[in-house]
Length: 250
Image (cartoon, rainbow, N blue to C red):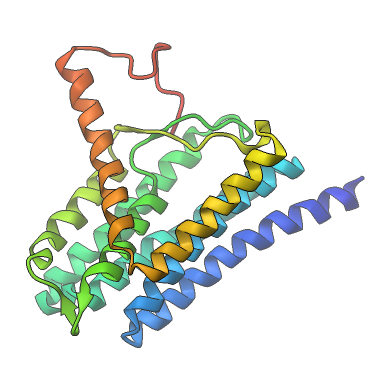
């Protein structure tokens, strides 16, 4: 029994380590000025991040160890990698201030993950997210670079949005603004699961073919949707965003 559980846990944790590996490779290629491949590797890391949770829940191997390992991998792939990517692609020209501003994606992402780890209660139940998930922040940055980095710089006028984008994403990660979690695949039919995985593959291929521009607009729309929804509830003076008394996510 214990051997079987170990084998199942090994599968889920292996997927998580692939996430970390992609984050490391992204940093390596960004240091070599290959920003396209560095951006794509962050996207691949996000796919592995999605899959490790799905695999753990399907195999019934969710554990505190898995949560901690997942957070450590997220710090690398979705904190350090996008921060280094945007620094090398654009922010390096601002010297020390460029380093500080770029590091916000890493620092605030780490704070967001730490908050998640101390608040998560049931490892098998995930509600909506409180604050922008760090993979979404990283994906937004990588898609931005993938779409608008040309001729050794960020295209005009998009270069004027780099600093506001970094600050916005960083603050949203530690905010209490609600973002919806993905539907739980465990309760889906086999047909729905196949469709979901097909959509993931199509999104990844589309990001590569289209240089990520359309996907960037999709992600930035999701980011602003959370803000607009929060403002909507504030204007209506509603305390309950979920309709059940309190947010159940972290």
